[in-house]
Image 1 (cartoon, rainbow, N blue to C red):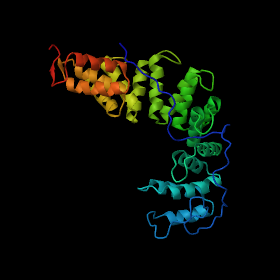
Image 2: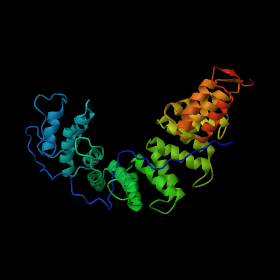
Image 3: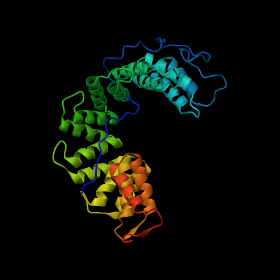
Image 4: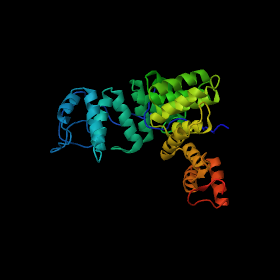
Length: 346
């Protein structure tokens, strides 16, 4: 019997952009001149760019600042990125440098500043300002800006909801080689949101996402291959996609690969690989992985079972609303089995 695979929707993870409608808020800061002077440290709205006196935490920052002040926008972005990477982060300074570069036309800095507005890092939390900045980022060719803009349009977060514009933003992100954008595009094609349903194009977009090393793109591709959407089912290809997802850190891919090895679907049964993949998936929070792990501990082929481990795994899966895991959990409780390992025949 095949294990249940639940397809996920769009990744709501920060990165975004693409031209569209619904975000008509003015730029969050007035443009600063490309030759802004390097002056004393000022507030977050200032166009004057300088490290605070005595700030030596960024060894290369002064040279980068000088380059930023004369219009080398990648230098501005890098200074902001380094401030954001400090512990604790210095978001106000980071946002100032990103604003300066964004106003100069640097798309990646618009994306970073837009994400700052979404999260309230160094600037007031403002979804509309964040969405407008992601639109600007996408217009200026920033792949991550296109992805995030598409997500915000789809969710109605600061702009939209506008599925058609979200589709266009995701398509642009994928054209620019952004793995998350390709995954989102594939899901939109698969589900017919903002575009007619086109399963062949969905598969192609997910293949591109997986090739770009986006774990959930590989997982979504595996799901389509498993159930035969976009063509005939290909269980061997599905297992390969799930294993690829797992190797990239995708918990759902680990759980699904474990289930295929556990049941011998698309591959001969392999207890060791079933256990390894299920443990990895469950450890990363995947309900299917935890359910599989519970089955392994409760119904071991060698006649041994570990009800304590089974109960723990089924409990984790049940907390994530995995129905079969909840059923197995109740079964264990009705049998009073939660102690040390016992014989399956007991």
